[in-house]
Length: 69
Image (spheres, rainbow, N blue to C red):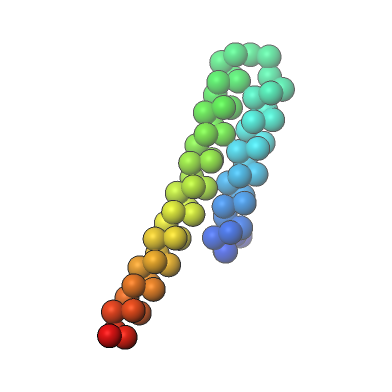
């Protein structure tokens, strides 16, 4: 089971790479397009995870900073 966000992001990029490799191996244009779409979705998911973590960290830091004035 993946627990750390970095592990989850790496997993998504690994799955994206696997989809790209599948797209490059297939001779069928429809499958190539489908694998490329899957790759795009894995990449988007990884980027969303990074953004979510960044915003969460920023929010935590902002809340801690509010009480210090």
